[in-house]
Amino acid sequence: MPTYVLGLDVGTTSIKAVLLESESRSVAASQSLQTASDIADLNGIKAKEQDAVRILDTLNRCVGLLPRDKLQHVGSIGVSGQMHGVLFWNAENGYDWSRGNFSQLITWQDGRCDSSFLSSLPKPDSHLSVATGFGCATIFWYMKHRPDFLKDFTIAGTIQDYVVAMLCGLDRCLMTPQNAASWGFYNTSSNQWNVDILNGVGFPLHLLPQCVPSGELAGHTRSDWHGIPAGTPVGAALGDFQCAVYSCLNAQTDAVLNISTSAQLSLAMPADFKPPDSPQPESSVAFFPYFGSSYLAVAAALNGGNVLATFVEMLTGWMRELGVELSEQSLYEKMISCARNQEISDLTVSPTILGERHDPFTLGQVTNISARNLSLGHVTRALCRGILENLASMMPPERLQQAGVNRIVGSGSALARNEVLRQEVERVFAQPVVYGPNADSAVGVASVLCDRLMSTEDASSVVK
Image 1 (cartoon, helix red, strand yellow):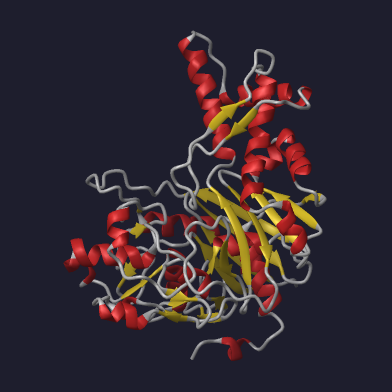
Image 2 (cartoon, rainbow, N blue to C red):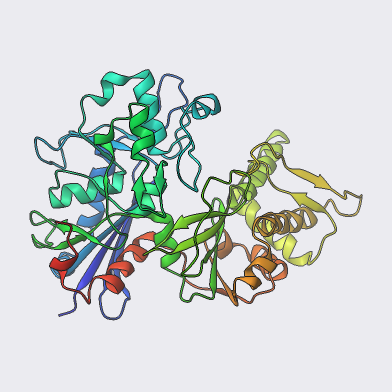
């Protein structure tokens, strides 16, 4: 009878669960459900929170839809999820899926920590900057504005850390460097929190999770769960971004290009690479901890498929004002058809309507406009090219060549549905481009367990 690894991804809008067959590494079953967990009214503080009870209920329903005969043969469980955010809980009374001994989830999209507040925080001993939505920044905000709130909780972590703690009945939060780095005030070279810096400003150090290596086990399930036997090994939670890359990065010489809502171009750094000693806020490339002591170099553009979606919304709005009704899907298909026929365009579109993290005040531009290049085909072609040229300006093709990258693995919903975007990828980058399955965090976290845990003695990897 085959055995399986259960991979769970706790995303910003949905939960995905996959069963990966351990030997063939093929997906035997998968389910995905929207959480609909956003909380609407947050008193105008630019906060972004989600109902953790609803997230956990959706997770249970999602796993419950998988074939029970296969769940009974799950040999390990991996969990990934949305990074940066923070959930508070108190494990003194034990864990219960249906009882809220936890706070709402403050997500990575939270905006309550404005630039003035962030500038008041101590400088971190890390190569990564601290931003609003980061766990430590949010805790600092509660220290200043709602200190009594923190008194109700003894533990803090990401939502995926909580899932692992609940499955294993842990009395603490075990966090991997992938998630710790996304919280801020964590040094990835020493694998230590900035304890002295935080202690000096009265930070509640007891809320800091205990860090364990990425790919290590956190414990074993404390009871049967949807047919999965008690005592099943559970990996410490990983970051969704790293797991998505892991699902399609097949060789050190590959780079992964993912274009969905936003866009990311990632490559694995050499084993001896060390990140800078301090944050580089104006750099368009960030270095995220991967596995072991390795790093990913990541150009993460805020402008990707969302720019095309904004263009479609603009056109449908204009048409509606003119008394013409056409669905966004139909318009999108017409745009791509026109651009496919318009193989080149001398129109230039800089699509940075959302700014970029390294240049937040940049705006979009359209230049080289003439009477002959204003057709829908011209504009769509130029817009697709602009998305790729913006990403290439963040991580130039020459940098990929210098890093030894000899091919690009293309992934993401925007690339999958847009032939013109794929054509522009192949024009902008010199390396050959291959299109595999979409990057998938649930598949990635299950693959990590297959690759890193299945060949070892379970007990030797568990944190004592």
